[in-house]
Length: 138
Picture 1 (tube, rainbow, N blue to C red):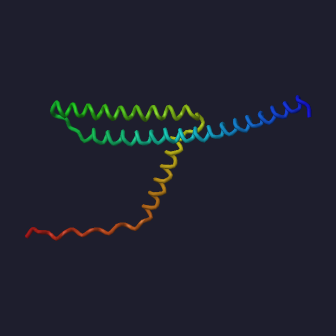
Picture 2: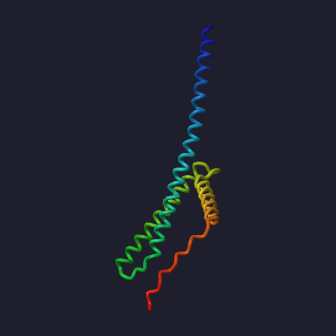
Picture 3: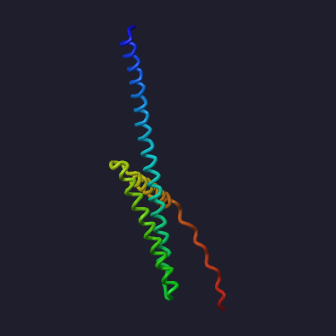
């Protein structure tokens, strides 16, 4: 074998190795992309739940004093801050893969689970009625 043939064989082996490495990197990158999407979708779901929790707390308020009004403002600010986190995580998740959304996939799965749970609950027998205690009035 001549030197040009040896060099050609060597470059061919190295080129094949690089191609295999690039394929592995691309495949691993796709896996990581989906992992990152689902991480951001989880952050979005948690932020949405916190937003609902803060809104529930706000709906219980009836501020009458300046201190209570200040507390209400803090609750509203917390709700708005959590809403920003949900919006940002949704935007970031959407930039990873514009064709597939992990947030939508998680919502679809949650809806399917909820629908199945509701169907199962509707097939359950009605609970027994608890008798009312005897009247103490005479």
